[in-house]
Length: 360
Image (cartoon, one colour):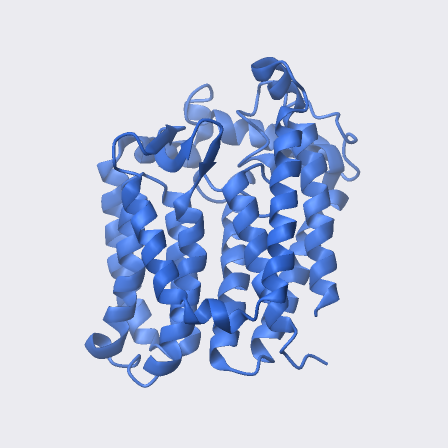
């Protein structure tokens, strides 16, 4: 097993648990009367995820690939179930959760892994068809677009983007023509413009991205407060637990904007170390993909690595103001049960594949 990859995962997980406590303690005390509320839940999620890693390392990856069609269909059914009255739960304006009381899951998170496994099963048999637009490329594209449409109905643009970009990267390395992606990019830009125009809150987010100071207490509030957190962090940071922005400036800083608190408390050195650990995971993931014994294993390894890489890039870009605000968690670090559990389970599959790879 790739112990370098495992070490990077465990170190990030530990940092994440500590930073969830630091970022959430003030808000948790105010909202629940318990400064450890989010910490206790995150530790529980982490334990479940670690058990998931252990199970996935023990079960050969190809068994999950063989079940890919069933897993994909179940994920689709869960996404559809969100729109059944009494089943779907609305949080933060998005109908993205299924659950009862305090227990809930986010089906869109599991859809990402479901798509990766399905592509790993189908693409090895469809490689010769991929260069053909209607015979190969469009049918595979449909397997991405359908769940993306269901996710956008919630709406959850961030998770939808991760799903689409991961799927596109898998199609690219499997042999799809670049010309197909160029045409698709043009259509995607038109569709994205339509999605933005169709939802006023997305237009306001674009405007806030271009000039957050135009509405500093409204749509520009989050990015301004995020930058206010990053700036004072300096080289060494203000020290663990000493963030000022977590005092009700950053809304729920333990989720999408947790990296802002990390940069404030740990500084440039701490933030760079976290990014280095993500780089290690990407590096080892690509090595595993390149040196795997069969194409299905390579596609699963590359898909899981790409999924994490895309999510990290989007989250960090939002936090530092490079792209408009999109609600998406930072893998292994942000608070969240479905996201953390799915990420750790996915890495368990990647670690299992590393047992069969011939990495020198």
